[in-house]
Image (cartoon, rainbow over all chains, first blue to last red; front, side, top):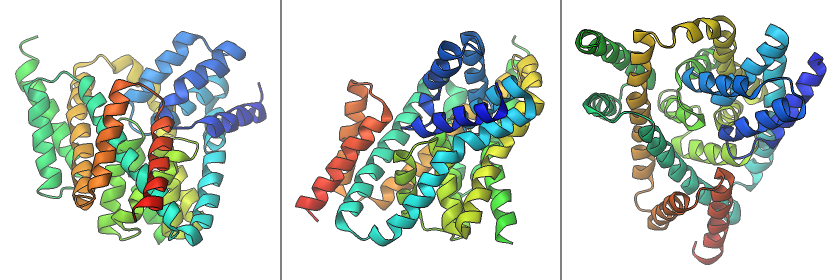
Length: 180
Length: 175
């Protein structure tokens, strides 16, 4: 394994990562455990779980973990540049071409349709996030309070996260720690 | 300095977004309201493009937003700034987090973050739907896609393609 090799593996993964970051797990398993036997399946699953519990883009976290595990800090850096290589070029090229086509009615129709799909996918993301949480009173109270703060009082996302994290942890500390 | 502002804003997004690519949208929406780098309507186009091109949606949309704001340099700066927190977290925190992830504070913090994450996305959805509230065909298409995906679990790109084709057909027949 050399840095150059690692770079090209992640360039390839970036290029075939279609339909969002969620598909990265099977691709990583295929590339690093099945084909190259560099990581065990348990390691990959652990990286994936950790990636989801850390802030940031899941696919980016996953890339860093694997780069770091295989080749240290430089590995993480090289893997990061590798995975954004093709997506970056695609966006830059597409955006410059799209500028002159944006008023074409078929392009508008295409973007309208995909825009609708994005709304549907965000709704499904919310549904999935709700399914993976314990929906007790605590959940609904924090949910409604932060929604009110965001929507009615126009609080920024970051202030909302900070304020309600502190309140939530404080509540848990005061009322639930003693009952354990 | 536009680049410093981009670094600051996108580093924050990388630091505070939880739960997959679409989790960055609330932040990007907020940016469109305070800096006017792009309009909310342009943002929906950006998300649409970011969803059908290869790569993680959260990264792609950062690239696009940076490009829109300050050209190629802007897109490089925005993309890397958004990924940088992951880099530091993985290197400095991964061992620590692994050790402490069952501690009371980390566990209650993560249980608190889930409802906040849902609220962030819900607020964006309300704004997006409000902006399209007169577009009945669009709302119908959203409903159709949700039913379709609940009934048959396919990869996301499948729904993107279907929605794109319906969009082109709509341009052909309705307009």
